[in-house]
Length: 213
Ligand code: BG6
Ligand code: MG
Image (cartoon, rainbow, N blue to C red; front, side, top):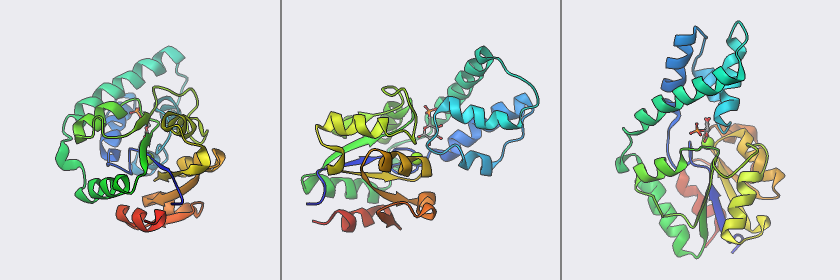
């Protein structure tokens, strides 16, 4: 087998939380009188909460103190968490679950490598609490993607060398993080356009072809 472990980004790979991030940021942006649209939302993919807010504030006319930034980002997160409560196990695509189960039956270790501090809560909503062999997320890192820290930690938790892991990502910053961490990567969704990955997946189950049996 080419790999011993697979590290999955969460938002945009295992599930689709984009619309909830958008709704929560939009509500805050409207309140603050900041222009915000889907295109700007796409730039937030893979980026930490505070760095996302900095991108949104590019359209803010004025200065905001660090204290206010932290307060507003927390407010966005409260809105986002409320929206996440709409997620159920029905939001887990059966193709995703079947593919994960097949990879596991082939002896691969499976981990999450996500910038989100809500990863645990999302996995719970999807019925995947405790499913992965390791979870590395926004709570255990100090540097966000494209820094490789989140993936290197995931490999460490799996007790694997980076070069034995494949990363699956939907964001350019995530592909860059994998490459910086000396890991192969597979792109799905928007990340395919970057032309940086070892594999481009049209659909999640294409991963089975990429890793071989
Ligand atoms: C990433 C998302 O997974 O997590 C980003 O792609 C988001 O859009 C980041 O900003 C941080 O998420 P959270 O849940 O900690 O606010
Ligand atoms: Mg993502």
